[in-house]
Length: 324
Image 1 (cartoon, one colour):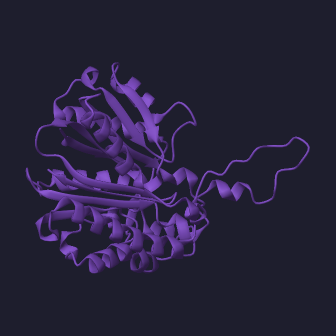
Image 2 (cartoon, helix red, strand yellow):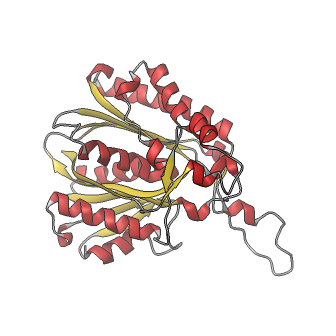
C-alpha cells in the first residue's frame, strides 16, 4: 500500500512587498537582500489569518481532486503561526469546508512541518486506518516578525500550500527520513511565553522573544549538513539513483543554501525547483507551494521521481522521495 498525491494547491495573500518597499522602513536594499538570500519579493497578509489561507488551499485541493468534503477522512495542518493556541487550524479548516467526517489536528515542526504532516498521513493510510487525507502547510509569519530587525524581517512571507492524498497500489511515497536535533533548539525560536509570578515584574526584553529570533550562521551550517546527509541516506535506501530524480524541491529558505546542497550532492542545480525570489521563506508552506507551482506548470508527469527536502526550527529536517 502506498500514499499517492492526487492534487496540489496553494494560496497566498494578494499584497506583494518588494525589497524596495522594505528599504523604506528598515536599513536595507534590494541588492543587499538579493545577493544574500535570492529573495526579490514576498506576499504579506492584509488581515487574513493562517486559517483563511489554509481553508482556501483546502477548497482548491478538493476541487482539483474532484472529491466531496464529506469524503475526507483526515486533515493535518502544519504551522507555527496558528490563529489560536487551541483550536487547531485543521479543525477550523474542517468546519469551513464541511469535512464533517474527518479527524483533524495540527503539527508543529517549523519549516519541516509539511514533511512531518505528509509522513503522518502516509502512516495512517499505509496502516489502513484512513483512505485519504488533506495535508497543508500554512503560515502568516508577518505577525511574528520584528519589522525593525533587518536580519529576519527581509526573509519571510505568508502563504499556504498542500496536497490531497489517497491510498494507492502503485505510485506514491518511496522512501523518507525525518529527524530532530533538539540540542540546537535555541538557534531558531519564536513565540516565547513564560509562567507569570504575581509577585515579580516581567523581565525586561521578554517581549522581543515573541518574534522570530535566529542565529543565521548556525542555521546555515545546520541546513547545509543535515539536508545533504538526509538526502544521501534516503537515496541510498530507495535504490533510486540521483540521475533518476527529475526534480528536487528544497525548503525555500536561502538561495545560497540550495546552491551548496546541490554542489555537495553533485545533483545539477537545474534539477532544483526554486521560487524563493517570489515568495521568500514561507516556512511549512514553502515546499507545498513549490510543488504546486511545478505541478501547475505541467513540468511533472506520472512516474517522475521527485525529492522533497527541508529543515526547520527544533531543529528538524525531513526528506521524502516520491513517484508522481
